[in-house]
Amino acid sequence: MVLLKKNDPRRKWRSFKRHAALLGKAVALASLITTLWYCCWLRGWHFSEDDKDIQIGATITTLGVAYSVLVSWILAASHEKYKEVVLAVLKQDKETFLLYRDERMLIAIHVLIGMVSVPLLSMMCMVAYRHALTGAMSVFSVSLVVVAFWLVITLIENPIQSEWFRERIPGDWLTVDIDEHFKLGKHSKK
Image (cartoon, rainbow, N blue to C red; front, top):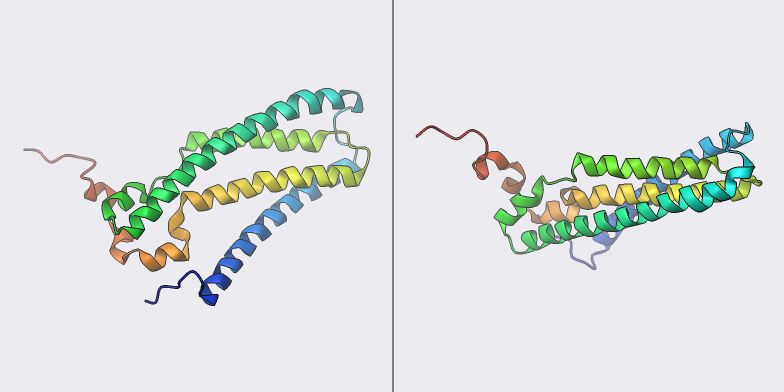
């Protein structure tokens, strides 16, 4: 197998396609959320305009700050794991690679992200916008950030999806049974 190097046009093209697809997914999902918001806005489904200042000032700001803190923490932790996997591959360190290969975010972290993301998006959608363009831009931009974060974190969390890794990882590293390798599970009787 030929390793594609950094300046290889094929690698650049592959990277462009992969990132364009990522951006396309994020834009498509944010557009879908914005379209759903618009359908609701046309029917007058939103909170009272009298409560708009409280809704924006307290709820959305609080959720936005909580989301920002959560995102920065998760992204930093995931990036550290990603760097460990890259170094393990570059150093041909099978043990370290296997330690991180199947590691994913705890389900509780996924739930926590959802517990902040869904109310944040919901509150953005329920603001009594006076103009459709203002509402659409607000809902779209927040949706795009939330969706893009989710897509990026899932990519970082599972680096083996990357062609760069698949080109450089020996095939047997991907098929090793982690439980057997680290002697986990039922212990044999002595």
